[in-house]
Length: 461
Image 1: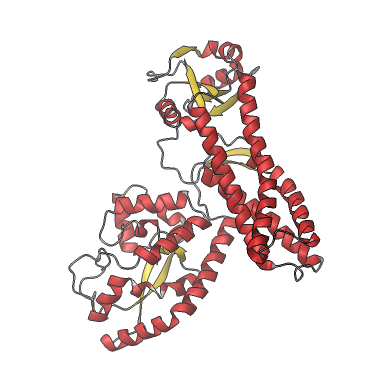
Image 2 (image 1 turned 60 degrees about the vertical axis):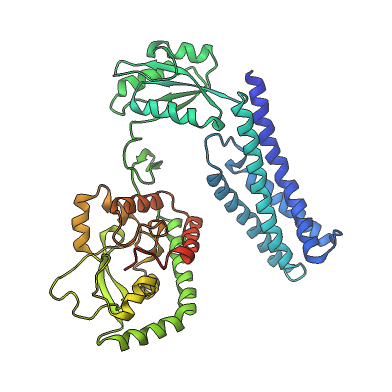
């Protein structure tokens, strides 16, 4: 049974290892036919394809792309694949420039080859995953697992694995410990901790999931002692599933193993990538909207006495404040007697021009200057005034965690309708989801969605 299962996994991995080079060759010919209407590729094109295949074997073979993806999402694998594809074709283009062959070959062919081959590799993985899921749902290619402990997290593990049959993990049962206060519903109890090692070895168990509180060092140590002769994968699930964690991970600091319970995703290369994204897009957008901003500036100036821009203190990344720019939508003395007031439906403080700007979110356009200055990001949690921040942080759990990212002009909450005087709890949930799942592609998705449903909204006032 185990040999059969291993053969299935090896067959799936081999499909990708063979499929990727074939995809590169096939899409190179398809791109050439689309560009020139001919399938007879010249020798210099075939030479380039051969070099690309060699680069792909080296780059992809040294990556985790051909290892078991059991339990990992297609989205995570796609991001990893895109990075490797960029490395391969980037190295290819550098080689072409170095040998002065860039002018001899069609750059349009190269660009279309890159796009087609990437789509082909993604399609291959999607099909392979679908086949694997189909096989696993029918009881083949399974990994056997047992659970140690009867904590709440252990029950979550059982329920999650049971709801995701495509992962191909079968829970055989669980082992009790001296610190259990209940039972696990579903799988049978297989014994206590002292019988764990014998069962795992005797039944060729593939995975052992230890679901014990971190404070139970003695029970964890006993479980590891029981498994000292086992070759099973051992997975430790500390009691953190119910905690509000952001970007938790495991790393080494000065050689010490450290579990990060919370950290901003914008560090190192990610911080640089985010900054480049913001600056480049801000410059391009400002060039495009300059005539619109000029027209709005004139309209604001004519609508009522006062400056064109309205500067307001807002709080952003790491609780730092900055002066956020807007086109002025109210008379200059609108808050003289009231102080800071939360905008809500039905208010009439705005000028006629200002009301239109708010309804269409055009008053937000000057914030692209804030992005250019480094105060804001194009995508991120919307910033709030400090007076409201100090109020909301006591009323809304995890409210301050939104400041682990730079404030944005638009965000995941805004394109999902949580803007204006709406449920702040839902808005924070969206902000934390964005921080936890940030990627360049997630940003571009939000920016694209903003074009269609992020400007005019019933809650914009």
